[in-house]
Image (cartoon, rainbow, N blue to C red; front, side, top):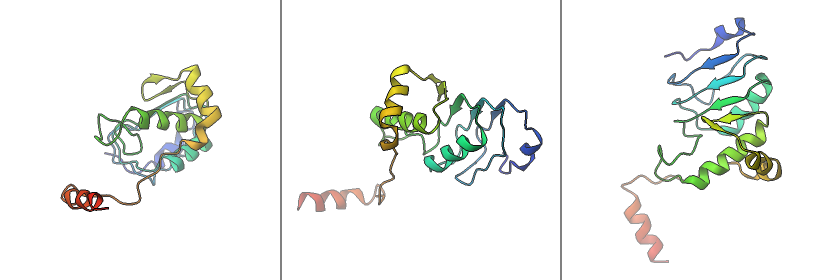
Length: 149
């Protein structure tokens, strides 16, 4: 598993880059890769979406295919039980707002309707993290307190 991507700066003509299962996190930094059109970052440890997308917009101007499946930043009901299809739709809209040239996101073709939605409302679809996190052992007490309100 590779955590340092320093060596990629020697490959400015790189067109496809598969970085699945590499323990990459929010500190991911790619060099300028002007020809990169395909990037997969599946099953890493990326939790923050906006900074990653801003970075990719800057260093990968030709990007058309991006996949972030299996990261916390990609809300998916198959990976996280507290996420649903609406969460995933909002995520897609926000990603397309930040990276409007994408043709595929997470192995699904970007539709005309999604592109229009991203243009109109994408800036408001930022996925916010909850202010607190309950462990499963804390949930019963929290629910009891809610019932008492």
